Length: 184
Image (cartoon, rainbow, N blue to C red; front, side):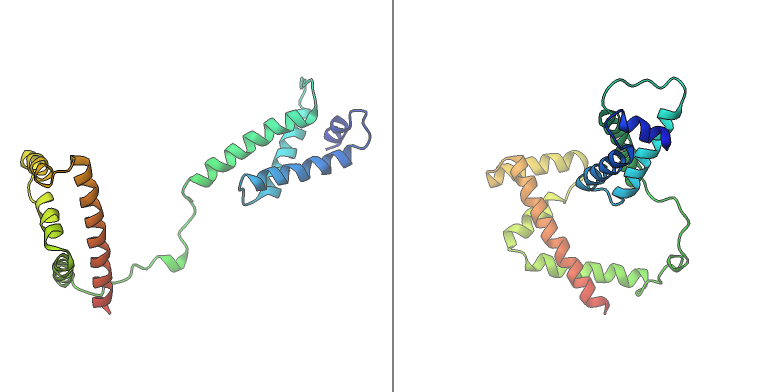
Protein backbone atom coordinates (compact mmCIF):
# COMPACT_ATOMS: atom_id res chain seq x y z
CA UNK A 1 0.00 0.00 0.00
CA UNK A 2 2.90 2.33 0.75
CA UNK A 3 4.23 1.89 -2.78
CA UNK A 4 0.81 2.84 -4.15
CA UNK A 5 0.69 5.98 -2.00
CA UNK A 6 4.21 6.98 -3.06
CA UNK A 7 3.36 6.31 -6.72
CA UNK A 8 0.19 8.43 -6.44
CA UNK A 9 2.01 11.28 -4.74
CA UNK A 10 4.84 11.56 -7.29
CA UNK A 11 6.12 14.73 -5.79
CA UNK A 12 2.70 16.38 -5.72
CA UNK A 13 2.14 16.16 -2.02
CA UNK A 14 0.07 13.71 -0.03
CA UNK A 15 -0.43 10.25 -1.58
CA UNK A 16 -3.19 9.42 0.89
CA UNK A 17 -5.24 12.44 -0.21
CA UNK A 18 -4.71 11.44 -3.86
CA UNK A 19 -5.80 7.89 -3.00
CA UNK A 20 -9.04 9.06 -1.39
CA UNK A 21 -9.82 11.49 -4.20
CA UNK A 22 -9.25 8.83 -6.89
CA UNK A 23 -11.24 6.25 -4.92
CA UNK A 24 -14.22 8.64 -4.69
CA UNK A 25 -14.01 9.28 -8.43
CA UNK A 26 -13.88 5.55 -9.15
CA UNK A 27 -16.96 5.00 -6.99
CA UNK A 28 -18.79 7.68 -8.96
CA UNK A 29 -17.75 6.13 -12.27
CA UNK A 30 -18.86 2.64 -11.22
CA UNK A 31 -22.12 4.01 -9.82
CA UNK A 32 -22.75 5.92 -13.06
CA UNK A 33 -22.23 2.69 -15.02
CA UNK A 34 -24.92 0.99 -12.95
CA UNK A 35 -22.80 -1.19 -10.70
CA UNK A 36 -24.51 -2.53 -7.62
CA UNK A 37 -21.26 -2.59 -5.60
CA UNK A 38 -19.28 0.50 -6.68
CA UNK A 39 -17.24 0.72 -3.46
CA UNK A 40 -16.07 -2.87 -3.79
CA UNK A 41 -15.09 -2.37 -7.42
CA UNK A 42 -13.15 0.80 -6.52
CA UNK A 43 -11.29 -1.14 -3.82
CA UNK A 44 -10.54 -3.99 -6.24
CA UNK A 45 -9.19 -1.45 -8.73
CA UNK A 46 -6.91 0.09 -6.12
CA UNK A 47 -5.75 -3.33 -4.87
CA UNK A 48 -4.88 -4.52 -8.38
CA UNK A 49 -3.04 -1.30 -9.09
CA UNK A 50 -1.10 -1.68 -5.84
CA UNK A 51 -0.14 -5.26 -6.74
CA UNK A 52 0.95 -4.26 -10.24
CA UNK A 53 3.08 -1.39 -8.96
CA UNK A 54 4.77 -3.70 -6.44
CA UNK A 55 5.90 -6.16 -9.12
CA UNK A 56 9.46 -6.01 -10.32
CA UNK A 57 9.78 -4.47 -13.74
CA UNK A 58 6.67 -2.29 -13.50
CA UNK A 59 7.13 0.71 -15.72
CA UNK A 60 4.33 3.08 -16.54
CA UNK A 61 5.16 6.50 -17.81
CA UNK A 62 2.33 8.95 -17.38
CA UNK A 63 -0.31 10.07 -14.94
CA UNK A 64 -1.49 7.50 -12.38
CA UNK A 65 -5.12 8.35 -13.16
CA UNK A 66 -4.65 7.04 -16.72
CA UNK A 67 -3.35 3.71 -15.45
CA UNK A 68 -6.14 3.48 -12.86
CA UNK A 69 -8.72 4.17 -15.58
CA UNK A 70 -7.47 1.17 -17.55
CA UNK A 71 -7.55 -1.10 -14.50
CA UNK A 72 -11.04 0.17 -13.64
CA UNK A 73 -12.25 -0.58 -17.16
CA UNK A 74 -11.04 -4.17 -16.85
CA UNK A 75 -12.58 -4.56 -13.38
CA UNK A 76 -15.89 -3.24 -14.73
CA UNK A 77 -15.81 -5.68 -17.66
CA UNK A 78 -15.15 -8.60 -15.31
CA UNK A 79 -17.99 -7.48 -13.04
CA UNK A 80 -20.41 -7.30 -16.01
CA UNK A 81 -19.40 -10.79 -17.16
CA UNK A 82 -19.92 -12.20 -13.68
CA UNK A 83 -23.29 -10.44 -13.36
CA UNK A 84 -24.53 -11.89 -16.64
CA UNK A 85 -23.83 -15.49 -15.61
CA UNK A 86 -26.37 -17.56 -13.80
CA UNK A 87 -25.60 -18.09 -10.11
CA UNK A 88 -23.90 -21.42 -9.55
CA UNK A 89 -24.51 -21.68 -5.82
CA UNK A 90 -26.68 -24.26 -4.09
CA UNK A 91 -30.45 -24.02 -4.30
CA UNK A 92 -31.95 -22.64 -1.07
CA UNK A 93 -33.91 -25.14 1.02
CA UNK A 94 -37.25 -23.38 0.50
CA UNK A 95 -37.06 -23.77 -3.30
CA UNK A 96 -36.68 -27.55 -3.40
CA UNK A 97 -40.38 -28.36 -3.33
CA UNK A 98 -42.20 -28.57 -6.62
CA UNK A 99 -45.82 -27.49 -6.23
CA UNK A 100 -48.35 -30.17 -7.07
CA UNK A 101 -50.56 -29.34 -10.04
CA UNK A 102 -53.99 -28.16 -9.03
CA UNK A 103 -55.70 -30.02 -11.87
CA UNK A 104 -55.14 -33.41 -13.53
CA UNK A 105 -53.51 -33.38 -16.97
CA UNK A 106 -56.78 -34.18 -18.76
CA UNK A 107 -58.62 -31.47 -16.86
CA UNK A 108 -55.93 -28.93 -17.74
CA UNK A 109 -56.20 -29.80 -21.43
CA UNK A 110 -59.98 -29.52 -21.27
CA UNK A 111 -59.76 -26.17 -19.48
CA UNK A 112 -57.31 -24.81 -22.08
CA UNK A 113 -59.48 -26.00 -24.96
CA UNK A 114 -62.64 -24.45 -23.56
CA UNK A 115 -60.85 -21.17 -22.81
CA UNK A 116 -59.37 -21.07 -26.30
CA UNK A 117 -62.82 -21.63 -27.84
CA UNK A 118 -64.27 -18.84 -25.70
CA UNK A 119 -61.48 -16.46 -26.64
CA UNK A 120 -61.74 -17.28 -30.33
CA UNK A 121 -65.50 -16.66 -30.12
CA UNK A 122 -64.75 -13.18 -28.73
CA UNK A 123 -62.90 -12.27 -31.93
CA UNK A 124 -64.61 -10.65 -34.90
CA UNK A 125 -65.55 -13.49 -37.31
CA UNK A 126 -63.16 -12.19 -40.00
CA UNK A 127 -60.26 -12.09 -37.51
CA UNK A 128 -61.12 -15.56 -36.22
CA UNK A 129 -61.10 -16.85 -39.78
CA UNK A 130 -57.72 -15.25 -40.51
CA UNK A 131 -56.18 -16.71 -37.37
CA UNK A 132 -57.54 -20.22 -37.97
CA UNK A 133 -56.60 -20.25 -41.65
CA UNK A 134 -53.10 -18.95 -40.91
CA UNK A 135 -52.35 -21.92 -38.62
CA UNK A 136 -54.40 -24.58 -40.44
CA UNK A 137 -51.87 -26.36 -42.69
CA UNK A 138 -48.43 -27.95 -42.49
CA UNK A 139 -45.25 -27.70 -44.54
CA UNK A 140 -45.63 -26.52 -48.13
CA UNK A 141 -49.43 -26.19 -47.88
CA UNK A 142 -48.91 -23.78 -44.99
CA UNK A 143 -46.65 -21.53 -47.08
CA UNK A 144 -49.02 -21.60 -50.07
CA UNK A 145 -52.05 -21.03 -47.84
CA UNK A 146 -50.48 -17.99 -46.23
CA UNK A 147 -49.59 -16.50 -49.60
CA UNK A 148 -53.15 -17.07 -50.82
CA UNK A 149 -54.59 -15.55 -47.64
CA UNK A 150 -52.42 -12.43 -47.98
CA UNK A 151 -53.53 -12.05 -51.61
CA UNK A 152 -57.21 -12.46 -50.66
CA UNK A 153 -56.87 -9.77 -48.02
CA UNK A 154 -54.88 -7.54 -50.36
CA UNK A 155 -52.00 -7.10 -47.93
CA UNK A 156 -48.31 -7.96 -48.05
CA UNK A 157 -47.22 -11.22 -46.45
CA UNK A 158 -45.34 -9.31 -43.74
CA UNK A 159 -48.45 -7.25 -42.91
CA UNK A 160 -50.38 -10.52 -42.57
CA UNK A 161 -47.72 -11.87 -40.21
CA UNK A 162 -47.97 -8.75 -38.04
CA UNK A 163 -51.77 -8.93 -37.95
CA UNK A 164 -51.70 -12.61 -36.98
CA UNK A 165 -49.02 -11.92 -34.37
CA UNK A 166 -51.26 -9.31 -32.73
CA UNK A 167 -54.32 -11.56 -32.90
CA UNK A 168 -52.37 -14.47 -31.42
CA UNK A 169 -51.07 -12.30 -28.57
CA UNK A 170 -54.56 -11.01 -27.78
CA UNK A 171 -55.91 -14.56 -27.82
CA UNK A 172 -53.04 -15.78 -25.66
CA UNK A 173 -53.70 -13.08 -23.04
CA UNK A 174 -57.40 -13.96 -23.10
CA UNK A 175 -56.63 -17.66 -22.54
CA UNK A 176 -54.28 -16.84 -19.65
CA UNK A 177 -56.96 -14.72 -17.96
CA UNK A 178 -59.61 -17.37 -18.56
CA UNK A 179 -57.50 -20.20 -17.13
CA UNK A 180 -56.47 -18.11 -14.12
CA UNK A 181 -60.14 -17.40 -13.33
CA UNK A 182 -61.16 -21.03 -13.83
CA UNK A 183 -58.46 -22.58 -11.61
CA UNK A 184 -59.71 -20.78 -8.49
